[in-house]
Image (cartoon, rainbow over the protein chains, first blue to last red):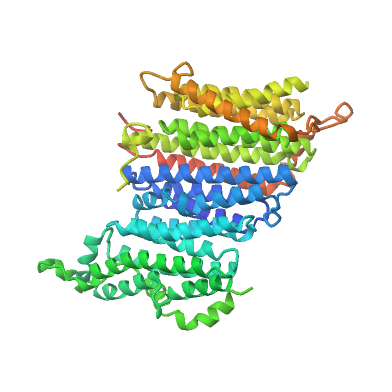
Length: 348
Length: 98
Length: 173
């Protein structure tokens, strides 16, 4: 791709999210989301491979439908109450529609089916953009809309965590597993959205850090399914010992960073007298933990028999920049002692 | 609920139902999407006109420009899909399921 | 006038039901033409003649030509119109659904909606929507620039998606 066009498209990605962040008016929020969708389409299809084109088409259809539903709900709100402000949604019907449209946009559970297929068709860099940066603008809108119906968000959240756990069990493709892990984490964020939005934001940030380091390390070891993970010790031995820690952090095991949001969310849910829901959510994390553990097992605890030439590459210097990975993975692994500071940072 | 409100709501919902349930051709899906955007344009324009609000009269134009962008991106994807898959039937978009 | 507007709104719903009932793309594009024409009528009835003109020119002049061209790309040997049973059944089913919904909300309809944009239109030089759209060039400049920039972005998107030696639209056969 021509660098000028690439610069234009990346500027479009940034501009769309910024417009959505800065807007208090639904029309502008919708414009920002549309710019975002339009700008990422050529990046997704840049290899012109049939799978990439198919993933782009599916992504486009889902996102365009969600954006149209969002605009329809806000126009209905204007007809019913004469109000365009994001903060002042009063009528329950448009608010519910907007919640559903945003759930379709970020891929929450009953509306999630596009997400694994789209992520499977992309390369890892675009997949990283799709599962981090593209979630920011819809999440900013979700945080601002007061939910009309408390049950809706809880149902969306708990279904997402369960589907994210169950869907990933049977997969051998890393990108599909990453998509299901994204669905499960989004479910955790949605569960606590109406009780403590700052906690949702904290979870989103921690998820971004974790998934960033995982995508980058998979990109460095050039792995797209479990088989290739098993031979990655020959390429980068240090990475092979770090990736299981990142995976377990995504799974939410105690000494690692991923435990922090799950801990706080469970505490908040118990405080709101939702102990059964918290139990189900905690149990659904076990489902996700199973496939994270399986990835760690295939990567570190098994040693595939390689021939002599295939074991050589770790002696060669790596050509990829590893500084972002170093920062992100150390944040992924050992941010938990900073929990009081981070929690204080996000309370507003 | 005024008759105009009912009319554009039902047209939007019809377009959404067509997009969600009938997926033979990609072009049909794009046409349904376009019908949804058209009903949104009419809704926004009628809201502006009924409230006699001059300031809002440019928002339907912006909506039309953005929906034209969306439609052209969709048609470009139609061309790309026809090149890679040989047809625009949505059933043939099955490479990524497993 | 009121009956006229009712007829136009009814035509709007019928046209979209015709599009949504899964006919072949040619006929669906035809249905969209019908919907756009009815929408122009509705806007004129509400006093938005300039917006109606924009809709007419953009839709029938620009977009539907492109859609008709793409329908040729998606051609099929035995096109299904509204004469075939599955399509007709779906269209009738959708219309019945809309009728049921209309019957449910019918009691709550209120009739204050047929007022036009400028009540003293005979005394003013410009309609409200013309001056409103013209405000896009003064106080709505940022909006105009954003819209123009998005159109440029879309140009790049389209070119990038359909580009290529062996696979693009602009290829040497």
